[in-house]
Amino acid sequence: PLKMLLVLVLGIAGFFTGSSAQAQTSLIQNAPARRVLSLNGSWNYIIDPYENGFYDYRREAFDKSASGKGGYYDNQKPSTAQEPELIEYDFDHSVALQIPGDWNSQDPKLLYYEGTIWLKKSFKITPTAGKRYFLYFGAINYESHIYLNGKKLGMHQGGFTPIQYEVTGKLNSSGENFVVVKADNTRHLDAVPTINTDWWNYGGITRDVFIAEAPETFIVDYKVQLAKDNMSQLAGYVQLDGAGKSGQAVTLNIAEAGIKQTLKTDGEGRATFSLPAKKLKLWSPLSPKLYAVSLTNGTETVQDKIGFRTIQTRGQDILLNGKSTFLRGISIHDENPLIPGRARGEGDLRMLLTWAKELGCNYVRLAHYPHNETMLKLADEMGLLVWAEVPVYWTIAWQNPATYQNAETQLSDLISMGKNRASIVVWSVGNETPLGAPRLTFMTNLVKKARALDDTRLIAAALELHRTPDNVIHVDDPLGESLDLTSFNEYAGWYWGGKPGEITKYTFDIKYNKPVMISEFGGDALAGYHGDADTRWSEEYQEALYVNQLKMLSTIKGLRGMTPWILADFRATRRQHPVYQNGFNRKGLISSTGVKKKAFFTLQEYYRQQAAKYD
Ligand code: GCB
Image (tube, rainbow, N blue to C red; front, side, top):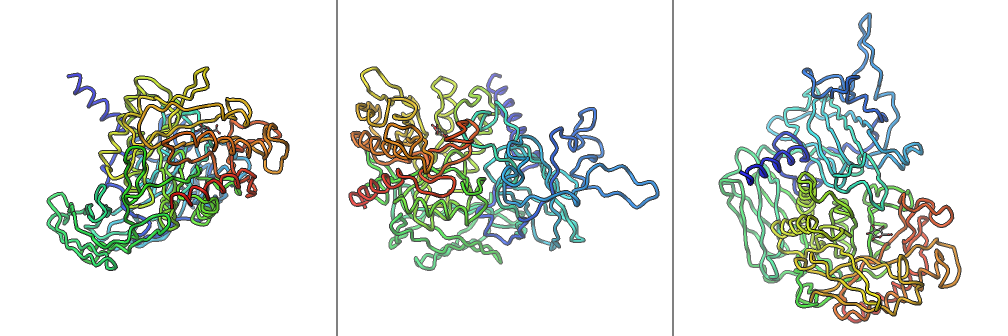
């Protein structure tokens, strides 16, 4: 009975935290590459801190009332009758936000806003009989209620993963349609992330929005990758959705590799495959070879560009395509420091990765939450390995089953979105989570989930360390047992350990015989502020910190990579120093005006040497 109760509780929790009440088609693989109508652009908005557009004056939700009407999602207009109704909002005469884009960076009065904003977009589409339609949002932070033509599609929680609703039969055949989103970025103790983070709580529709069209039975999902640790075997599956999904022929074609195979779906609409692929040119940062891959199901063809590589560990080595490698990385937030605000699309994202390439990187840590799907594709194209992460950050509500379910859903959606990207080599299940039994259970379950969903990549988490008076840094978090890498954040010379010149006295005691990857180190510097190596906030201090960190870290035998914190300055409310910070975490190697600080060149030189050794 206890077990049954647990199942029930988890079931209910899933119901409340999941995408929506309606049964969901799994996320459409490579959705942006389907036949789409973009809904990017101007969206009219209404700021609604009291949620007047959602609750009536007795605080009953309009969308739970018998008629389901009364909320702003009705997008009502005054009638032309003699005595028009009172309507106290009007989207069409309201100002607009540009989507994709957070609201904080588009209107000064919204910089610190946390709460509800309603967004509305009218659009024309004439649905074709026999086609299916899906409304797709790359991300909305944090909780969203989505309505099409006044009818609710669902509710979603989680600010960094795609949201998708089938709208077949719900589009007006007249062609005139509107979608209304209630986006609410209020922070909650039991949410993922929780109320306390070191990044800005950007709200709104921060990634692309579109309607995707598909045939009645269509290719909803696929995985085309190398088999685990096998450089000459392709393995994966194709999944159809729709009434005709079973017993269908689907053709996988990788013309350049001479691969053409017709697969037959089973009763569940799934065809798994395992094929020899002898002469593939493997993907690597030095040679980011992508193959045009197409999947054809009747009249439907889905195209992708996919790279093939293996990643594994052997003792303390990280093997990329069987060869030992050193991960020359940098941590990155999904933020364009020049706006400053969430990166809004390919241009912003390409700028960030171009900076990483200039630094000499072959690797990036996309912290601390899932980044834009476009970012993952650019990493494939530009030749950068990726650490991808979920926002299980600091003090999560470890004991709350709904919180776990939420984290697991975000992890599953991330893996679903990224599984065909050769660039992604690490799934990270969290960052700097405090030791304790409930946390260990929570995190271990996420590790198991990640492995069950994808056994071809490495699993990691950014751990913490502790020190003893003999100047030894110990890394022995029990979670490390189940991870493939030993990764930890280490802030000697900034939060502890004295001045940069003093930190080389530390030595390391690392429990696990696994590759060591320093997931963070660094310190703030205000670009253009100069002093000596002991003057905190100066470029010289940060430079000395990097010089001595690299010296200290080189004593770690199993050191196989690092992602210092961080590529560029970013907004953070914790960073209040009025002279040096001004609401920015200044640990960037590049300033919020795009200027490279001295430490950029220190790390660049070190990476030049590492590349000479390993590449
Ligand atoms: C950390 C966190 C990161 C912070 C950074 C800092 O350990 O993982 O999110 O921004 O330190 O600057 O303190």
